[in-house]
Amino acid sequence: MADAASGGGAARLSRRVLRQEMLLVLAVSLGASAVGALISFTGVVTRPGGLSEQAATLNSSRAPDRPWLDLAWQLFGITTDLVPVVLVAHLLMREWAEAGGPGLRAIGFDLRRPRFDLAWGAVVAAGIGGSGLLLYLGAHAAGANLTVVPESLPDVWWKIPVLIASALENAVLEEVIVVGYLLRRLGQLGWTPVGALVASSVLRGSYHLYQGIGGFFGNVVMGVIFVWLYRRWGRVMPLVVAHALIDIVAFVGYALLAGRVDWLPTA
Image 1 (cartoon, helix red, strand yellow):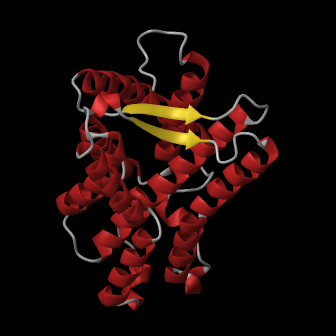
Image 2 (tube, rainbow, N blue to C red):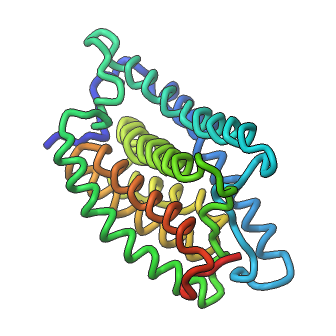
Protein backbone atom coordinates (compact mmCIF):
# COMPACT_ATOMS: atom_id res chain seq x y z
CA MET A 1 0.00 0.00 0.00
CA ALA A 2 1.09 3.62 -0.43
CA ASP A 3 3.13 5.07 2.40
CA ALA A 4 0.73 7.05 4.61
CA ALA A 5 3.59 9.32 5.65
CA SER A 6 3.83 10.94 2.23
CA GLY A 7 1.44 13.07 0.27
CA GLY A 8 1.42 14.72 -3.11
CA GLY A 9 -0.49 17.74 -1.86
CA ALA A 10 2.64 19.00 -0.16
CA ALA A 11 4.38 19.42 -3.51
CA ARG A 12 2.95 22.94 -3.68
CA LEU A 13 4.64 23.79 -0.37
CA SER A 14 8.39 24.24 -0.10
CA ARG A 15 10.46 22.15 2.28
CA ARG A 16 11.34 25.31 4.16
CA VAL A 17 7.67 26.06 4.80
CA LEU A 18 6.97 22.46 5.82
CA ARG A 19 9.96 22.41 8.18
CA GLN A 20 8.93 25.66 9.85
CA GLU A 21 5.33 24.48 10.10
CA MET A 22 6.35 21.20 11.73
CA LEU A 23 8.61 22.91 14.26
CA LEU A 24 5.87 25.36 15.19
CA VAL A 25 3.32 22.56 15.69
CA LEU A 26 5.76 20.73 17.96
CA ALA A 27 6.61 23.96 19.79
CA VAL A 28 2.97 24.42 20.84
CA SER A 29 2.39 20.76 21.67
CA LEU A 30 4.54 17.71 22.37
CA GLY A 31 7.89 19.31 21.59
CA ALA A 32 7.27 21.80 24.39
CA SER A 33 6.14 18.93 26.62
CA ALA A 34 9.43 17.13 25.91
CA VAL A 35 11.44 20.17 26.99
CA GLY A 36 9.32 20.52 30.13
CA ALA A 37 9.76 16.82 30.93
CA LEU A 38 13.54 17.14 30.56
CA ILE A 39 13.60 20.11 32.95
CA SER A 40 11.39 18.20 35.40
CA PHE A 41 13.63 15.12 35.19
CA THR A 42 16.73 17.26 35.79
CA GLY A 43 15.14 18.65 38.92
CA VAL A 44 14.24 15.18 40.14
CA VAL A 45 17.67 13.59 39.65
CA THR A 46 19.40 16.52 41.36
CA ARG A 47 17.09 16.32 44.38
CA PRO A 48 18.08 14.22 47.42
CA GLY A 49 16.58 10.73 47.42
CA GLY A 50 16.09 8.08 44.75
CA LEU A 51 13.69 8.30 41.83
CA SER A 52 11.27 5.77 43.33
CA GLU A 53 10.95 7.95 46.45
CA GLN A 54 9.51 10.80 44.38
CA ALA A 55 6.18 11.02 42.59
CA ALA A 56 4.85 12.24 39.25
CA THR A 57 1.12 13.05 39.31
CA LEU A 58 -0.73 12.99 35.99
CA ASN A 59 -4.30 14.15 36.75
CA SER A 60 -4.35 16.41 39.78
CA SER A 61 -6.94 18.72 41.29
CA ARG A 62 -6.80 22.43 40.44
CA ALA A 63 -9.26 23.53 43.15
CA PRO A 64 -9.64 20.68 45.70
CA ASP A 65 -12.20 22.41 47.90
CA ARG A 66 -14.31 23.83 45.04
CA PRO A 67 -15.54 20.91 42.89
CA TRP A 68 -17.37 22.95 40.24
CA LEU A 69 -14.40 25.26 39.75
CA ASP A 70 -12.13 22.20 39.67
CA LEU A 71 -14.35 20.63 36.99
CA ALA A 72 -14.19 23.83 34.93
CA TRP A 73 -10.37 23.77 35.10
CA GLN A 74 -10.25 20.08 34.14
CA LEU A 75 -12.47 20.60 31.09
CA PHE A 76 -10.58 23.74 30.12
CA GLY A 77 -7.26 21.88 30.23
CA ILE A 78 -8.55 18.94 28.20
CA THR A 79 -10.09 21.22 25.57
CA THR A 80 -7.09 23.51 25.12
CA ASP A 81 -4.73 20.53 24.90
CA LEU A 82 -6.62 19.44 21.78
CA VAL A 83 -6.11 22.73 19.96
CA PRO A 84 -2.88 21.49 18.27
CA VAL A 85 -4.91 18.61 16.78
CA VAL A 86 -7.32 21.12 15.26
CA LEU A 87 -4.31 23.03 13.94
CA VAL A 88 -2.93 19.86 12.34
CA ALA A 89 -6.33 19.19 10.72
CA HIS A 90 -6.27 22.68 9.27
CA LEU A 91 -2.75 22.26 7.93
CA LEU A 92 -3.56 18.91 6.32
CA MET A 93 -6.68 20.41 4.73
CA ARG A 94 -4.51 23.17 3.28
CA GLU A 95 -2.47 20.55 1.41
CA TRP A 96 -5.55 19.28 -0.36
CA ALA A 97 -7.59 22.47 -0.64
CA GLU A 98 -8.14 22.03 -4.37
CA ALA A 99 -9.39 18.47 -3.86
CA GLY A 100 -11.90 19.28 -1.13
CA GLY A 101 -9.62 18.95 1.88
CA PRO A 102 -9.78 15.49 3.51
CA GLY A 103 -7.94 16.85 6.55
CA LEU A 104 -7.29 14.19 9.17
CA ARG A 105 -8.51 11.46 6.81
CA ALA A 106 -5.09 11.77 5.17
CA ILE A 107 -3.57 10.01 8.20
CA GLY A 108 -6.49 7.68 8.88
CA PHE A 109 -8.06 9.60 11.75
CA ASP A 110 -11.70 9.02 10.83
CA LEU A 111 -14.62 6.65 11.36
CA ARG A 112 -14.52 4.79 8.05
CA ARG A 113 -13.40 1.44 9.59
CA PRO A 114 -14.80 1.33 13.16
CA ARG A 115 -14.71 -2.46 13.58
CA PHE A 116 -11.13 -2.70 12.38
CA ASP A 117 -10.01 0.21 14.55
CA LEU A 118 -11.75 -1.03 17.71
CA ALA A 119 -10.70 -4.66 17.31
CA TRP A 120 -7.03 -4.03 16.57
CA GLY A 121 -6.88 -1.18 19.07
CA ALA A 122 -8.08 -3.54 21.81
CA VAL A 123 -5.53 -6.19 20.80
CA VAL A 124 -2.67 -3.69 20.83
CA ALA A 125 -3.83 -2.24 24.15
CA ALA A 126 -3.90 -5.67 25.77
CA GLY A 127 -0.36 -6.47 24.63
CA ILE A 128 1.29 -3.14 25.33
CA GLY A 129 -0.73 -2.35 28.46
CA GLY A 130 0.18 -5.59 30.20
CA SER A 131 3.86 -5.47 29.29
CA GLY A 132 3.99 -1.76 30.11
CA LEU A 133 2.67 -2.35 33.62
CA LEU A 134 5.30 -5.05 34.22
CA LEU A 135 8.03 -2.74 32.90
CA TYR A 136 6.88 0.08 35.19
CA LEU A 137 6.76 -2.14 38.27
CA GLY A 138 10.23 -3.51 37.46
CA ALA A 139 11.72 -0.07 36.79
CA HIS A 140 10.17 1.30 39.99
CA ALA A 141 11.52 -1.60 42.04
CA ALA A 142 14.97 -1.02 40.51
CA GLY A 143 14.84 2.68 41.43
CA ALA A 144 14.82 3.82 37.78
CA ASN A 145 11.35 5.33 37.80
CA LEU A 146 9.36 7.77 39.85
CA THR A 147 6.17 6.64 41.54
CA VAL A 148 3.59 7.46 38.89
CA VAL A 149 0.32 8.67 40.38
CA PRO A 150 -2.22 8.54 37.52
CA GLU A 151 -4.75 10.62 39.42
CA SER A 152 -5.23 12.54 42.64
CA LEU A 153 -8.68 13.98 42.02
CA PRO A 154 -11.20 14.35 44.85
CA ASP A 155 -13.99 11.77 45.15
CA VAL A 156 -16.69 13.69 43.31
CA TRP A 157 -19.30 12.62 40.76
CA TRP A 158 -17.30 13.79 37.74
CA LYS A 159 -14.03 12.06 38.66
CA ILE A 160 -14.34 8.97 36.43
CA PRO A 161 -15.79 10.84 33.41
CA VAL A 162 -12.95 13.38 33.59
CA LEU A 163 -10.34 10.63 33.81
CA ILE A 164 -11.83 8.96 30.73
CA ALA A 165 -11.91 12.30 28.89
CA SER A 166 -8.29 12.92 29.85
CA ALA A 167 -7.30 9.50 28.51
CA LEU A 168 -9.08 10.20 25.20
CA GLU A 169 -7.38 13.60 24.94
CA ASN A 170 -3.94 12.09 25.51
CA ALA A 171 -4.56 9.42 22.88
CA VAL A 172 -5.80 11.81 20.20
CA LEU A 173 -3.11 14.43 20.81
CA GLU A 174 -0.18 12.03 20.90
CA GLU A 175 -1.07 9.66 18.08
CA VAL A 176 -2.29 12.32 15.65
CA ILE A 177 0.78 14.51 16.13
CA VAL A 178 3.69 12.21 17.02
CA VAL A 179 2.71 9.44 14.58
CA GLY A 180 0.37 10.59 11.81
CA TYR A 181 1.39 14.20 11.34
CA LEU A 182 5.08 13.93 12.22
CA LEU A 183 5.72 10.90 10.00
CA ARG A 184 3.89 12.55 7.13
CA ARG A 185 5.92 15.73 7.38
CA LEU A 186 9.25 13.96 7.87
CA GLY A 187 8.51 11.81 4.81
CA GLN A 188 7.74 14.92 2.78
CA LEU A 189 11.00 16.47 3.98
CA GLY A 190 12.98 13.52 2.65
CA TRP A 191 13.76 11.67 5.89
CA THR A 192 14.41 7.96 5.61
CA PRO A 193 11.82 5.61 7.16
CA VAL A 194 14.33 4.59 9.85
CA GLY A 195 15.21 8.20 10.67
CA ALA A 196 11.53 9.15 10.96
CA LEU A 197 10.84 6.12 13.17
CA VAL A 198 13.71 7.08 15.51
CA ALA A 199 12.60 10.73 15.66
CA SER A 200 8.98 9.83 16.45
CA SER A 201 9.89 7.21 19.04
CA VAL A 202 12.50 9.34 20.83
CA LEU A 203 10.07 12.28 20.93
CA ARG A 204 7.45 10.01 22.54
CA GLY A 205 9.97 8.85 25.12
CA SER A 206 11.20 12.39 25.76
CA TYR A 207 7.87 13.89 26.82
CA HIS A 208 7.45 10.96 29.23
CA LEU A 209 10.87 11.54 30.79
CA TYR A 210 9.24 13.20 33.81
CA GLN A 211 8.30 9.65 34.87
CA GLY A 212 11.94 8.56 34.97
CA ILE A 213 14.31 6.43 32.92
CA GLY A 214 11.86 3.54 32.77
CA GLY A 215 9.14 5.83 31.42
CA PHE A 216 11.48 7.11 28.72
CA PHE A 217 12.64 3.75 27.39
CA GLY A 218 9.25 2.10 27.75
CA ASN A 219 7.62 4.79 25.63
CA VAL A 220 10.42 4.66 23.05
CA VAL A 221 9.65 0.96 22.57
CA MET A 222 5.94 1.75 22.37
CA GLY A 223 6.74 4.41 19.77
CA VAL A 224 8.65 1.94 17.59
CA ILE A 225 5.72 -0.51 17.69
CA PHE A 226 3.16 2.20 16.95
CA VAL A 227 5.13 3.56 13.98
CA TRP A 228 5.45 0.05 12.55
CA LEU A 229 1.73 -0.57 12.95
CA TYR A 230 0.85 2.80 11.42
CA ARG A 231 2.93 2.05 8.35
CA ARG A 232 1.38 -1.37 8.08
CA TRP A 233 -2.23 -0.17 8.36
CA GLY A 234 -1.97 3.37 7.03
CA ARG A 235 -4.31 4.49 9.81
CA VAL A 236 -3.73 6.26 13.09
CA MET A 237 -7.19 5.47 14.50
CA PRO A 238 -6.37 1.96 15.87
CA LEU A 239 -3.44 3.52 17.72
CA VAL A 240 -5.72 6.17 19.21
CA VAL A 241 -8.09 3.41 20.40
CA ALA A 242 -5.20 1.40 21.88
CA HIS A 243 -3.69 4.42 23.64
CA ALA A 244 -7.07 5.49 24.99
CA LEU A 245 -7.79 2.03 26.40
CA ILE A 246 -4.34 1.84 28.02
CA ASP A 247 -4.79 5.21 29.71
CA ILE A 248 -8.39 4.57 30.75
CA VAL A 249 -7.37 1.34 32.48
CA ALA A 250 -4.39 3.10 34.11
CA PHE A 251 -6.34 6.14 35.31
CA VAL A 252 -9.56 4.47 36.39
CA GLY A 253 -7.77 1.37 37.64
CA TYR A 254 -5.56 3.46 39.89
CA ALA A 255 -8.58 5.35 41.21
CA LEU A 256 -10.24 2.06 42.15
CA LEU A 257 -7.20 0.10 43.39
CA ALA A 258 -4.82 2.60 45.00
CA GLY A 259 -4.41 1.74 48.67
CA ARG A 260 -6.42 -1.47 48.25
CA VAL A 261 -3.70 -3.70 46.75
CA ASP A 262 -0.12 -3.99 47.95
CA TRP A 263 1.55 -4.43 44.53
CA LEU A 264 0.59 -0.98 43.21
CA PRO A 265 3.07 1.77 44.21
CA THR A 266 1.44 4.87 45.71
CA ALA A 267 2.84 8.21 46.75
